[in-house]
Structures are given as structure tokens and as C-alpha cells.
Image 1 (cartoon, rainbow, N blue to C red):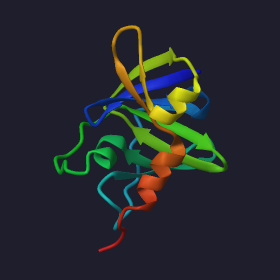
Image 2 (cartoon, rainbow, N blue to C red):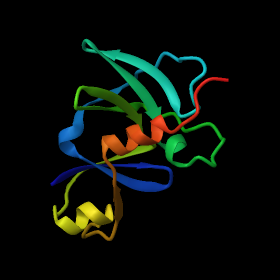
Image 3 (cartoon, rainbow, N blue to C red):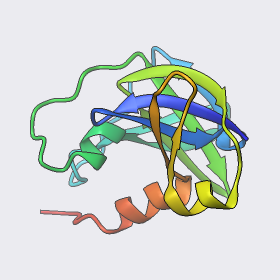
Length: 135
């Protein structure tokens, strides 16, 4: 499978490339009050509204320092849902072997020795739904 790889929360993360709608740059999300600190705001892109999440803040809950400003937002679309992710750094697309073991372990290793943690948009959505909202 083709895997889109990026860095956040001191990890290399991978999402199957077919979830990637597009990558946008130089966007400033409109902030929304009373949302968790990982929620950067919303953006409107080509007729679609996307919640934008700072992946580093979402996955590294112990971090209270401001996140690095990334010029990119990864826009995901799946099952009528839309979500934008702010990575620390985009690495690129890499083919990884799609095996039953990969689906259960959630970790793959590349020929360069890089460890990639596979995540799905549904897993990110679940993490977001478990957060506390409001004052």
C-alpha cells in the first residue's frame, strides 16, 4: 500500500495515501472558542469545511508548549468526514507491504530503518471524540 508519511509528536506517522484529499499551504485556520488546544480551527477549501488538528498536540498530551507552525495542512476525506492535520514535517509517500501482520501491529519498518506508526483517520477521530470540550 502507498503510505503518506509525516512527522509529529516525535514520531514518523503514516496514513494510507487514498485518505489524502490534498495538501494545502499558507492557510490560517479560523479559531473556534472552547475547543481543546490541539484543535487549531477550521478552514474552508474548495467548497468543503475542514476541522484542523495539530497532530503533535493531539498525540503528545503531556506537551503544553505551543506547537511549531507548519506551512502545510494535510486534508483527509473518508466516509463523509473531513479533517485537516497539521504535521511538524511532511516526509513523503512510501510503499509499504500490506500484510495481515501490518494491520495488527500498526508499525512498519522501511528499508532505510525508519519506524513508521500507521494510523487511520478513524483512530484520529476516536482520539478527538474522547477529549473534553468546553470550560
